[in-house]
Length: 141
Image (cartoon, rainbow, N blue to C red; front, side, top):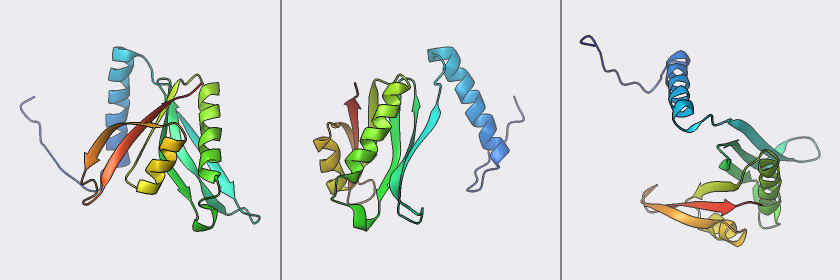
């Protein structure tokens, strides 16, 4: 491949990203088996149907990955994060998962996740600057 050109962009085309994703998935499927990745979301809504909290992630390779967990200020400290995580974990178990992982740089969230049985397995200092991003995992029944 003598005519390969390297390009860098902050605005990649969706079809180019699709090529990367599909080819990496094919490689991984051949190497370790299919991920069987399925999106998972849990929402909290107020009386008018507005989203006031929830979680987004996916299951794959027997794991639940929690990408986002957010609660409006009015819901914090009332146990909703634990309920949202429990709902996601229950669905993950129903999908055949045995464990979950999440990350945070928020000290309050870190304490909560640990209280809920998540155990740190890695840290990135200064990510973002002045904070430590902690990665946690939990075996789920």
